[in-house]
Amino acid sequence: KFLDLNFNNEYKYPVLVFHENFGAAQFNMIRQISLSNITFHKVKLEIPRFLDLQQIPRWYKGFSLGFRNMIRFHAIELYDHPALQHFDYYWRLDSDSFILARLWMDPIEFMRSNDYKYGFIATMTEKEDFVEDLWEVHEAYRRSQGIVSEWFKGKWNGFGFYTNCEIARRDFWQL
Image (tube, rainbow, N blue to C red; front, side, top):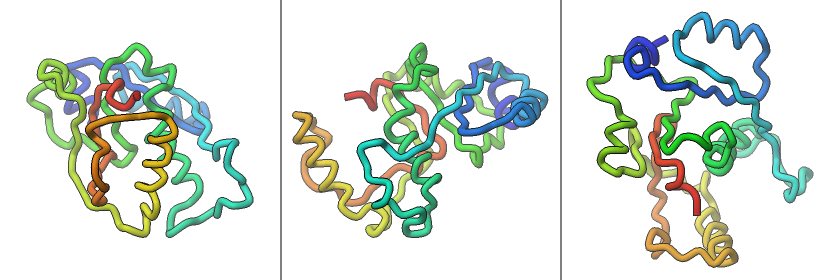
């Protein structure tokens, strides 16, 4: 409702909703609330086949397996999803993100016209125990794939982006 009222009634962007198990009642409720052109895209939030299911805890440091699978989707699979293939930019809003005031400009067009690659709402420092060994695993993967980039010099200090509201060029994430 706020998306339409404060932004999309004017700019008319298509809205893509990625879901795991919505039914007809949820589709209808969302369509009744919104005037936007909404399409729904079912995704499988599951553990990758190459991992041993027996080694993966259902809960880890307060986070459910379902939540971690959702994070994996947003971190890895979203950018290559077939539904996004016709878009240069995407604006991702989590279900708990709201546009509470009218926007005075189109943020996607602003990003495009300035050749910006990534926009975010806030930054943070990740808690060390949430990202234990992440940099080392990243470095091993990067080396195994022969990925060389100025972005990956040095050591990660835990800096991160609060990603429940982000705008990016889709190809920014593709290596």
